[in-house]
Image 1 (cartoon, rainbow, N blue to C red):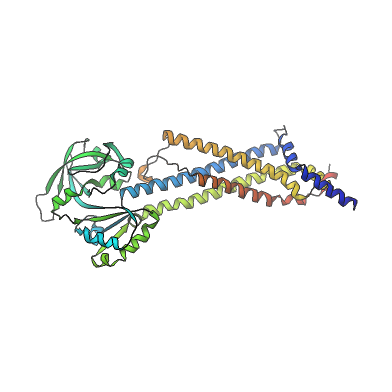
Image 2 (spheres, helix red, strand yellow):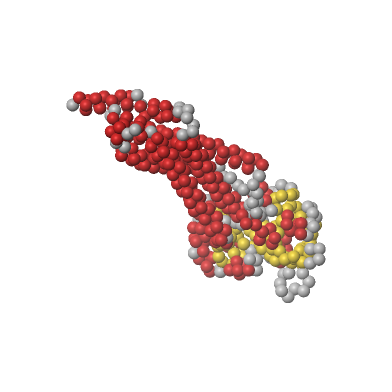
Length: 428
């Protein structure tokens, strides 16, 4: 009875004084830096720093690439394009569409969109130094949001509100290949039909150079005004090649595409809606793989960091087995002793996370300020390595790291329960 009361009193004494934290602080003040546990703890702290650093970098770069590539795709192409089957198959506007009837049918579907504009794609020839270069002339109406394209892609030229008649935008690579200067007038040839022997020739002023990093677009597309194409091909005012829809919520694009393709008007008039996702399925499938890669990297980094922490604390436990035996003989239970080493584990985790996050933000600041790391735009569609900072995900990754670490550490300290006080104290 006396022993039991003594044990209860000691337990209360341990709890009131927060003995686990007190012992942890004493162990942390140990000046001997040459013990095995001291060295392993330093390695574990470094491992946690590297783990969270690599995790944050992989997430930030993966999301950054996805956002950059998607933004470019949404700026180069419309969210949904409605064209005739012939136009879709050839990639050019062979047959005109009546825009008034099509617009009325679109309104009846009740879609929520932010913008609608019209376009025509026609084949053309540019006379280079010695030969002709085949290109697609894309005529756009004045509802096209040229400002966003201007912000992202225009490398040289004036700030644009619209592309006027007899004006064009060409890529920087096309200009270099053909020695074309800004504000220079160039001649472009159009064939109205296959039987035409002498092509129509128009002179256009080059008002800007763009660079999207999508080589297929840069090497093959010229942007101009839709009225030029209508004049050349003698189309009526209501005639268009494509109806382009910009959706407010990008998550609705696929659903809207299905709704439009099931509408009676499109089916009866041999028209089809194509989304930016269906037209560029390979690119979007490729960037979706980034999510899987991020999950793999995060899992591996957390696992490596946890293994290092567990090894460090196991070594510390075996180094302090006599202290554990004495505490148990005084009435300390396994949970109380476990908390001592849990404090140490938390110390390793917090320091590691702190160092890792500081290094991460330094790297991001340097890259965003000086663009040191370059990418091959032919492979990645961007020429500078992008970092996406989303503090919600950064806090979430740090919290995930801490929660998993604490849970694993708590469950692995079952080894403490196997330490016998009598054997440890009597051992030499």
